Amino acid sequence: MSDAHAGHLQEAKRTALIFASAQAVIGSAAPIMMAMGGLAGDYLLGADKTLATAPVTGFTVGVALGAMPAAMFMRLVGSKNGFMTGSLVTAFGGALAGLAIMRGDFWLLVTALLVVGLGGAFVQQFRFAAADASPADFKPKAIAWVLGGGVIAAILGPQLVILTRDMMAPVEFAGAFFAVSFLGFLGMGVLSLLRSDRSLQQSGETAASHSDARPLSVIITQPRFLIAFACGVTSYALMSFMMTGAPLAMVGCGLSIDQATLGISWHVMAMFAPSFITGRLITIFGKEAIVGAGLVILLTCGLVALTGVELWQFWLALILLGVGWNFGFIGSTAMITDTYRRSEKNKVQGVHDFALFSTVAFASLMSGATLNAFGETAQAGWVALNLILIPIAAACLLLLVIHTLATRRSVQTA
Image 1 (spheres, helix red, strand yellow):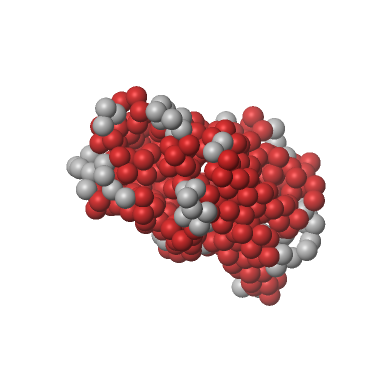
Image 2 (cartoon, rainbow, N blue to C red; image 1 turned 90 degrees about the vertical axis):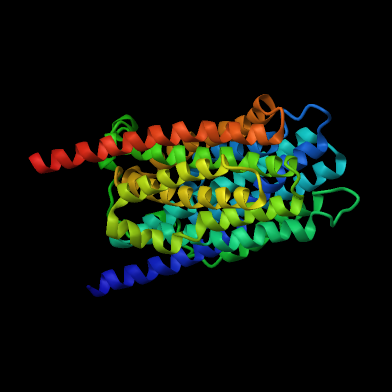
């Protein structure tokens, strides 16, 4: 290994560690939104609970709407300033959500979570920024390191909910959203440790020319991009679909709010804990194999959930849901990074995340609507969610297998 490569690798590890720490802090806002959004919406609504998950949808819509502006904003002001601005937006959204609960204003709550989602759009760029600052052999590990910070987020977020949701009693849930504001400001401190260069995304590519950038239509019509995108969207949307409805289903089946919150905690830990080995597994078995394993685990989640509605069945299904998302999403993200040049990354990443989180937002909204429309009981609604998950995951797995086999045949005949 040359001295230049060793220096680049060391700096990439430092950058990835900072982003992982920021993911742990600011990323804690996401499980709070997922655990509390639907319950808070249910708390503020009247008899008709169809829109109970609309606050969670507001969060995912915010992530989708913020994806492209976040990428362009960081290109203008630099990644460090951009990411710190995103943390400030998260802090503002958390404070606004707490105020909405205090006022009993459902649509202000939806708006507030949309603002938190706008801040979350910057968080979604952490994995790309870490990968782009890394040499090729460290990219999968850099992505995995960043998402590994979510293990702490999985503990910190739900524990903050349990500690603070009654802080503003007799008004429920407000304290948990005010805690998100604190996380936003704390995240700004972590991100201030990043190098002060104009754009971390330009690390290691000062000689890259933007003149070699291809049209977006050429990039996104590559078979590898399409399959990676389909697998990533499926993994993320199904995870959102199930996770958004799970707290409502658990409480509806007689479990407590704390048990539902801890279920989300186990789920989020399962989302991010495998990240410490996912990068290595990708190196050993290949990206496609790990994505395929993730889709198989998602199918197993659906089958386990159909066996009953005891606490252990909910929790086991949520754990499998998290692990399946981890393998499917990290593997797909690594596949996506193979399809574009450095000069093309901003537009590809922005379009990718906009399309991804638009789909995720739709999935979260449909979660509440499905529970309400198909569920005469909470158990029936939970069954309906899983009966939707299984064929979608199976279809995506089939497409991945067909693409992988076709790729291998083309390589063998070349």
